[in-house]
Length: 151
Image 1 (cartoon, rainbow, N blue to C red):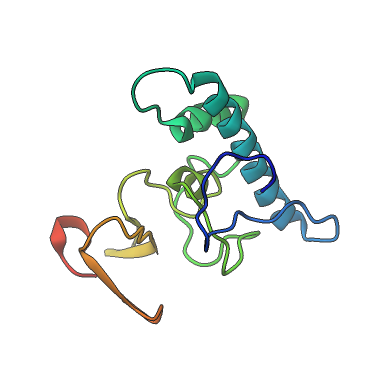
Image 2: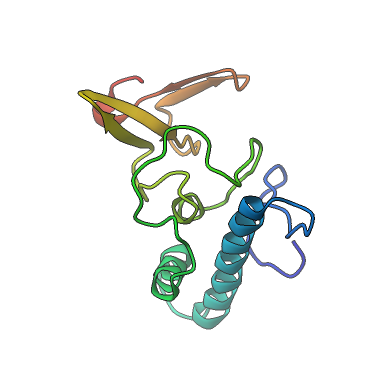
């Protein structure tokens, strides 16, 4: 990602640049994420010398909300595919998931919705920051959710 100071690590790549031949939904998602990255780099440059930890991702969320860039913020959870998001897309920040409607909570690892009298998980974010989950070659995920109850 030429010129970006964001560290994606060796195995994490950002969503690729706009593809003129791609679908309208895919290009919309990519454009929202491109704007986020642009705002993030700008905030990083602007506030780099300030003492203390600054959440540039949350600053970018405020800008994106204020400018009305993402139509996905504030919508109810979606059960199923998010148009324009593909299996294998990788993200660095939860805010990125939030602004494209893939995972609404900024802190909780489980997003959910109520259908009739049933609560359904619509997405689970396993960031690897906690020891409360285990992965088995990407096939099985044991995640300790709200209240340390395994899901």
